[in-house]
Amino acid sequence: MSEEKKRVGMIGTKERYFQPEIEMISAGDLADLQLKRLQETVANCYSNINFYKNALDAAGISPKDIKSLDDLCKLPFTTKQDMRDAYPFDLFAINVHDNVQRLHASSGTTGNATVVGYTQQDIDNWGDCFARAIAQVGGGSESILQVAYGYGLFTGGLGAHEGGIRIGATILPMSSGNTRRQVQMMRDFGVDILACTPSYALLIADTAIELGFDPAKDFPISGAILGAEPCSEGMRKEIERKLGVTVVDIYGLSEVMGPGVSCECRYQNGLHVAEDHFIIEIVDPKTLLPLPDGEWGEVVFTTLSKQCSPLLRYRTRDISRIIPGACDCGRTLRRMDRITGRTDDMLIIRGVNVFPSQFQQVIAAFPEVTSYYQIILSREHTLDKVTLNVETVADFDFDEIKKIESLQHRITAELKSNLQVSVDVKVVEPKSIERSEGKAKRVIDLR
Ligand code: DLL
Image (tube, rainbow, N blue to C red):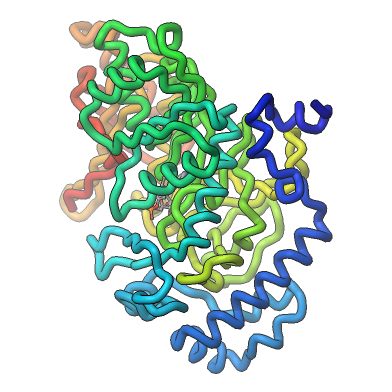
């Protein structure tokens, strides 16, 4: 095996899902590929989607004006509201009765659902992106992949499933829920790769331990592909320790493609974006001007290969940055940092902007508490009040009031000094915070 391949961590038959022609593409070749695909995408949008024809006409741009990648910033943005307004199929470039193989939709809890269609080619590309993630944790055609993301309109389950098909793994399509059964099959079937949300991976690990197993020793599982919600470094380490796995963070969103838009490599130092399928930009959320590499802002994606639901400059509302420089793994696809929050789940606590994930980072430094936490927002007179419930580890002596008070006091002080916010910290008994089988509900707003 070449030194290069050793560095990217591919061994044996697993080499088959390392695609050096893409994953180690030169900057020049990538720019050529992206420009060609961008031109095709803009032409597809203009000819087949009224919304984009009108938006491009209004901006005075025609597809032939896209002569270089620098012209990207001339294109209009697309927002979630645009997608909602297009419900159900107005942003499709293909008639839903023609080559559209599958529909996915985001939950419509705050308005119409956003609906995305996939042709067979779109699904194959998606599978390709997820398969790269499976390879990152050492998976290959001989793997048994347990998919414990929810199946259905949510893209987690079927996205991971497509990755499993693409790489030729044996797929265990558990979906989420029935956690004891997840543990039993993980053990009995000799699962080596798990795909689910980080909070569910932790629940699976804790359930296995409760049932008397030590998955890190007793189970052959060795890799986990976790995403769909933020996961602090502390929580990642806890899952890695309890399950005996390498965890890679995978990112995606239903509007753009579901899981696989970007994914960490085993160096766990940022998520390599599938730049053959997407152009990433980081923009200032206020001015919407592109920001240089290294600066934090809103993540914007333009799709490059999607046939049914192409998107130009989709504003994700997620906050991240491009990590400057090359990754030690040798891949050249650029890396985005882990998502620190969203422009719209930002909490403003007495004038201070904080993201739920920042609470997670602070409590991760306290060995007395677990990674389960909940932020409760309420109103006292006219002021917002924030209570942070944190749960102690099982061997914490919960009868010692002094110990509880001291812990509460220390966490409160740490939050104050790190985040400049005053929070009522409430230490609660083990297992009293509701467990989640999908994305955890971290914030409860009672205001
Ligand atoms: O969560 C798709 C997905 C499924 C990604 C499985 C990864 C794994 P949505 O339900 O549309 O799609 O939610 C998308 O979830 O805009 C982020 O705010 C958040 N999110 C997704 N992945 C991550 C991640 C799926 N790795 C929204 N870290 C996105 C932090 C994430 N947040």
